[in-house]
Length: 334
Ligand SMILES: Cc1cc2nc3c(=O)[nH]c(=O)nc-3n(C[C@H](O)[C@H](O)[C@H](O)COP(=O)(O)OP(=O)(O)OC[C@H]3O[C@@H](n4cnc5c(N)ncnc54)[C@H](O)[C@@H]3O)c2cc1C
Ligand code: FES
Image (cartoon, rainbow, N blue to C red; front, side, top):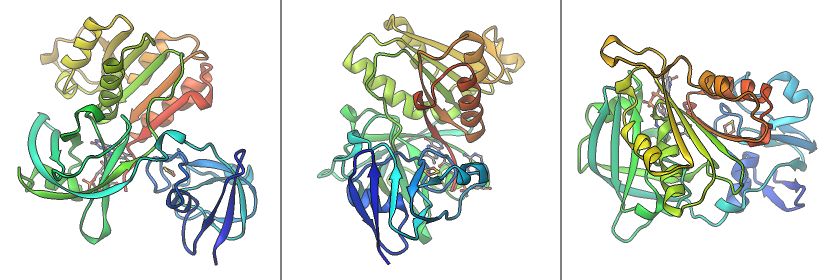
């Protein structure tokens, strides 16, 4: 049975059809709510149910705990209404009128950037464009309804080819194909743009935190920011195991030399002898903690593996970062 959902504070309403999650219904009715993984893993869509009941759906226990549920919280990407609802959620105007498309694309170019990182460039049909905000991602639509998410690394201004940085997950259904059978001229199907990881308007200084291929959406955000100028202070902390895993380090190093408002701090967790590394070492989010005594005046944009995102959020908030100033794209897997 359909249920009516009312958003607070805006008062806007939409209808959730049978078997639809709150997020699916909102997006279908062109109301953009914050989200990332869409499978109950990252927590970006967490919000408050002010009245009514939901079936919480399948989610990771640590992403929505029993304490969260007792506080009236739910993950809107998995929660299905079982009555009419009033929920508290911030609408995201910026993504509202961007069409989400399913398109065939041709693999135009492939380049191994590191032992386990492949850059893919996809060409859209000549009559199509993909409008997106820097930081958003696309899904590859695979056989049997499987989807795999990857962030766009190019900027919207240069959208002739979509650029993706794909880390090989050994034994992974899709990334094994990328590192094995996939070749130039293959046709793939994508759906996007998706997600709410994009730069918000503000004057606050920003700390970007990237782990491995978490650099991909940050490359898009920063390239776009430099393209449009501005004087906002920005620092990028990019962490990887060894120097070779910082697969495009020359690019942020170049940005640092060109832009007085930007600094780049590469951090290696397991530098090898061959790296001859005299730079920062350890966990990348710990390098931020070491450099900032008080994060209360900052915004953080973090992207990478879920454990890094969780630790960064918890430990940065302990250093004064307001929860609402932590934006993240957690590379949760399906
Ligand atoms: C919004 C979003 C954006 C993303 N953007 C990127 C990106 O730009 N670049 C990128 O490299 N990745 C990105 N990811 C992660 C990427 O989607 C997964 O790594 C990918 O789906 C793995 O697909 P697969 O079919 O090869 O592995 P699967 O067959 O799905 O998994 C195989 C096994 O590996 C485990 N696994 C899968 N992925 C990972 C992982 N990332 N880390 C650790 N274990 C894993 C699974 O639990 C399973 O046991 C993103 C994820 C999300 C949600
Ligand atoms: S947990 Fe809902 S979008 Fe990730």
